[in-house]
Amino acid sequence: MNKEQLFEQIQKKKSFLCIGLDPVLDKLPKHLLKYNDPILEFNKQLIDATHDLCVAYKPNTAFYESRGVRGWQTLVNTWKHFPKDVFTIADAKRGDIGNTSAMYAEAFFKEENSEMSFDSITVAPYMGKDSVAPFLNHPDKWVILLALTSNTGSQDFQVKQSDDQKLYEQVIQTSQNWATSNQMMYVVGATKAEEFQNIRQLAPDHFLLVPGVGAQGGSLSAVCQYGLNSQCGLLVNSARSIIYASDGLDFAEKAREEALVLQQEMEQILIGVNLI
Ligand SMILES: O=c1ccn([C@@H]2O[C@H](COP(=O)(O)O)[C@@H](O)[C@H]2O)c(=O)[nH]1
Image 1 (spheres, protein in one colour):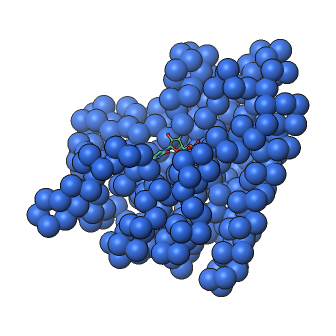
Image 2 (cartoon, helix red, strand yellow):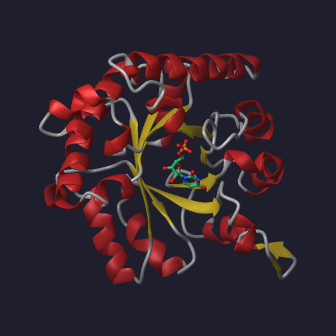
């Protein structure tokens, strides 16, 4: 999905919600345990209940990889269940020397190798240009580069100054020489709302993937105050607050209700800035 198509979906669905699919077997509704693959059933019912309210899904691969071969197969089958009109994000936080990154890119982008082909992958920037380039060699796919993450540990390195700039600012500036806003996005945590004004000056046209609304306490309205651009420019992710809204028979219905609250808030925000 390209940038224009993503903006079209945002306008059509009146939403820039990204739902995180981070399932843990112990937290699943007990009635799903009778299925051959309970996590797949959980994901499928969540997707069926919410896909008209969100524009993206973001499975974090750790929740699948931790289950070995079974988990990988669940990820593949979850990918196969995504409707064609949603933007898909493999939150894998990869990045290595060039030939290794090329293999990561094949794993997540090349359907003929791995039976799945996500629209995008999250990538750690710290090994530099040659570690990111192999992902960009897939012209119709996106790299979502970690810039300023939502966790408290982001203070350890990402905001440290060198050459009069914070490290995350250098990541955003330097990486703009590697790809345009048609192929690169940045991860910026919703818990870092005070930095969005600065980030929009550095990257006015890029989409930002914004995790941290919901369980981590980030504020949607605070993010939107400076985060929006002329094509919306935001994908706001929430996982636990949606997928674990209930652990009963009604889990998918309750997940939809939580997603609807965010979608309706997003709709009002989009109307307020004349984007719909
Ligand atoms: O800075 C970051 C980068 C990634 N994440 C991931 O997003 C989701 C958040 O889940 P919630 O349950 O809504 O907190 C999860 O997969 C994280 O690994 C992030 O939170 N912050």
